[in-house]
Length: 280
Image (cartoon, rainbow, N blue to C red; front, top):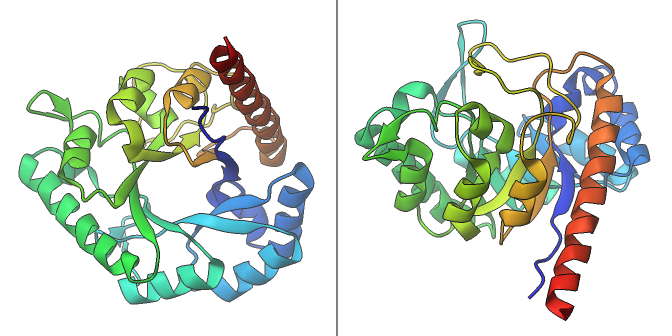
């Protein structure tokens, strides 16, 4: 059976600097590129405004990032924020029509011991039970620090996957997994249908890449060292292929459009290859 082609999306954090001064104009630029789906972030306190802009330009948010594990979240400036309640998070997600609420970050300390990973799994599993009452799923999104530590010979993120309720999914960031030294193609194959979304992100790979100091030389998809095409082809249950830049030295909308064109062409090529193999 030929897999269903995943929906191409964009993590809105990528263009947040343009959205903050003029949300409608920024969303209009995404629609002009060709996006009809995005991944929301920081959506709990601005769901009505986001929905108005999305509806005006034929865009929907099927996935969204929100904190589900930690109640207090550290910020880059050394302060912390109180995460919205699960009730408020799922209510806002319903306003936007979000189907999967994805926790984007649990700090490095949680991933160094089995007990730490068990705590993350327990909280995600509990959130999945709450989400199910709203007809939603929950997931987790990685950076590099969930994959560098090994527990019983396995990357901590893989240990997490083994502890999760089947209703909890993973969104694998292919760039950060590669930076952590993971063979992303083998890892995608190992986790199988647990991975329903990926972040399609590229750039040159070298020692020392870490979220502790985010690189600014990320490239449009297909122009760096990450095995994006192979990883996409290896994912049997992929629903969303989400473009993102953490740091980009240039016009970010140009980078996004280049990634969009590459991703659409790559997914179309995968469909053609699969169809040829089936007919053969």
